[in-house]
Image (tube, rainbow, N blue to C red):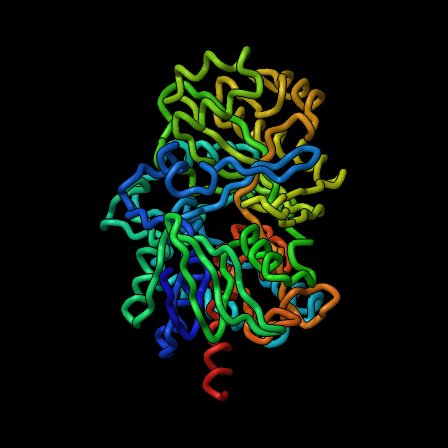
Length: 476
């Protein structure tokens, strides 16, 4: 058996864990990061490829929240977590959302100006910027279609660095393995990859050690404090296995998403990149954007009516995939099951959610037609090919959310923060209610899905909480 000691054990190395590790290590704390997945250098696998899904995603990217319909979701499982595999699109949290969270959940020391100030720091650290040169065809399609309809939209910045004057496909992702994890290491933090946390050992209100496995070998870690940053699915599972239950895993919030593939007269597919344009005409209820369009993902997008759609896969270079995402009223559950490795996840869409998904898919198809699509292939069972507005009306009449391939990449709110213990799992700075030294500092803390890509929110909240932790420890 291998044993380690540290001041602070940080579980997970994504947007929450990496930023937390850097702040704490730079303040002199002895930090040990444990990561279930491997370290994969950028460039080792093609972005958005099936190879990447196998190496950097949990379960190859095929995990499902059960429900009517079920919702497929993805989790990064590698050093850097989701920041290594997502599109890097960056949205500051809306100030109205921050104000709502502060009042509804009684979050102390949560002034919008302070959070936005931290966002500015993150943007500098990650070189968040717009594409300096040419955009991909997929970006131009979404922009063209929305402008012809008179719908509001804009290019979304990304955490990328670009050679001067180069375009969208020449950037280098400024993920956690390029930014905050190196900062943490430079300040003395250590990291163990390929180590799965099996159990946090408690003595009453205090956690005292962790039990892990690494390639079949047992590993133990003793610590002063533990900060769980495993993401909105794994964090509640870790806490439940340790016997913590209060408001944990009961309020999963996601942005449910439906997709379509659209074929154009000529090559539009960029396999290793996505559109950086989003349509926000109907925000915060729904928004439209571009999805990864690697050939394997194009084939997957056509499977709901393969008999009618399958022939289009041979022209995959002329196809691109787009999504309509909604802000959901529904909520989900994350529950551990004895003897089962991963938790059971369920999600319930409301009638309003199901209706919005149908409206979103119809409006997205309209954007594609206005942009010049020859054919649109909606991702629901037995959907028709859409070539004109008459077909669009037929598609709308046939759509049902229960027949759709609904998915999400934004998962939040399974250990919400705030001082209202009736609603929240942690206090206003991530300390678990009912514990003395167990903290949460990742997407699980966000009280609700923010209606935009949540990773800016996650990083800003994590840095805020990490600084508070350092201040409190300095007083102790």
